[in-house]
Structures are given as C-alpha cells and as structure tokens.
Picture: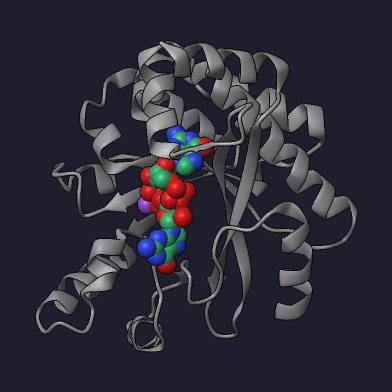
Length: 254
Ligand code: G
Ligand code: G
Ligand code: MN
Ligand code: NA
C-alpha cells in the first residue's frame, strides 16, 4: 500500500506533516479561549491527503501511535512557544483516535511531551469522539482519570452523533462537550435548535463546558450566545490557521 509506506516515511523523517490550529472563541467578553490542532499531510509530489483518510490508514497500519506522538509533541512545542513569546496562554487540544485510546494508556506519552517542552498540563486538552468512548473498557477510564488528575482537560468531540449511552457524560472524567456541527448547521430549522439547547443545558447541569463546532453564521452565533454556549469554533471566527497566522489572529482579536 503506497499511502502506508509514504506515511511511514513521513513520520520517520518528520517531513510533509504539519499542524493547523483552529481557534475556539470564549463568549462574553469574546476572547481566544483555546486552539484545536488539526493534522495536515502533503505527499512528496505535492498532493495533500484528506485527514480522515490519513487517520484511517494510520489506524489500519499500526501507525496511529507514532503519528499521534508526533502530533502531541508538535502541539506542545507550539503552545510552549506561544507562551514563551507572550502571545497567548490557552490550552491546545489534540484529537485522539478511538482505536488508539482503547489500545494503550496515552497519559505517559502526553506527560513526556509536556515535560520536554515545559508546558503545564492545564494547557493541554484531549479530544476524543463520542464513539470512541462506546467500547469503553476499564482501561480507558483509568487512563482518562489519570489525565484529569494531572490537570488536563478532556473534551467529547462530535457529540450527538455517536449513538452512545448518555451515562458516560456523568461517569467519565470529561470537562467539555463539543456539539457536532450537523446540529449547529440546523439551528435555524425549527425544532432542530431544541437539540442544541438541550445539549447545552444537560452539559451545564453536569458541570461541563460546551463548545459549538462548525459555527458559520451570525444567526448561529446569536442563538448559541443566547443559550449560554461557552465556546464557539468554526469558520465564522476562523478556519484552521498556520502557526504564523495564529499570531496575527490573536493580535487582531484582542
Ligand atoms: O481538519 P479536518 O476537518 O479536515 O479533519 C477531518 C477529521 O479528521 C476530523 O474528524 C478531525 O477530528 C480528524 N482529525 C484532524 N486532525 C486529527 C488528528 O491530529 N488526529 C486525529 N485522530 N484525528 C484528526
Ligand atoms: O471532528 P473534528 O471536530 O475534529 O473536525 C474538525 C474539522 O472541522 C476541521 O478539519 C475543520 O476543517 C472542520 N471545520 C471547522 N470549522 C468548520 C466550519 O465552520 N464549517 C465546516 N463545514 N467545517 C469546519
Ligand atoms: Mn476535534
Ligand atoms: Na468534531
């Protein structure tokens, strides 16, 4: 498989891999509340590979661990650099694939990256999809408890699409819920907005903060602000940015 060998090569040589960073905006007063790191991969011939496809290949070919190690290291390096340059001090979120979390305890890998770059745990957030929590073994729960005990945050990504039981919202040591963008995109279509409102109320009642994903319009923003959504992510404020674009965004925003 060509993609597999190209990916193996990219991970080994650390070439063609790049992180983009999408801001999360905290509301009232509006400010940059965090970033999500998103992987981008460019082949030697200049073609870029769809991230979902890349993650799928990495999962299938036993490359998800070394790939995620690189992503975590790079995210910590970049966030530590922003702090050192007095640009901004907010958490950076990294996406973890379900197949990775079920296979191994990710806490040690994260801690070693934090240590290497002198980044405090409170500036790191783990994002995992709702569906990855479904086949939750005792092992995952212990690993997540460790991560929380160290002071990191844990977000449930794509919330509302995973068909999982709601009980994990109170059983798992999570700190925030990210409303999937399919719900956000339907906000102004009658009763669909009721789902968004219900997710926000339920999450707050359980002590979790709420992030709305895929916010693209003023109407969506106004609705979410009225419903006390805590953070907004989406093209309305910013697409995923290159590191040097983050500097300009932060300065323009504050
Ligand atoms: O960034 P984009 O919308 O193209 O991402 C597409 C999908 O790939 C999203 O579901 C996102 O969560 C996932 N993704 C992006 N970057 C990473 C990453 O670094 N690790 C994992 N596991 N998934 C990622
Ligand atoms: O599943 P996850 O939330 O990690 O996916 C993140 C992906 O969502 C990113 O790759 C990003 O490109 C995409 N994304 C971010 N904001 C928006 C938006 O406002 N609209 C749409 N359609 N996609 C978005
Ligand atoms: Mn995500
Ligand atoms: Na998501």
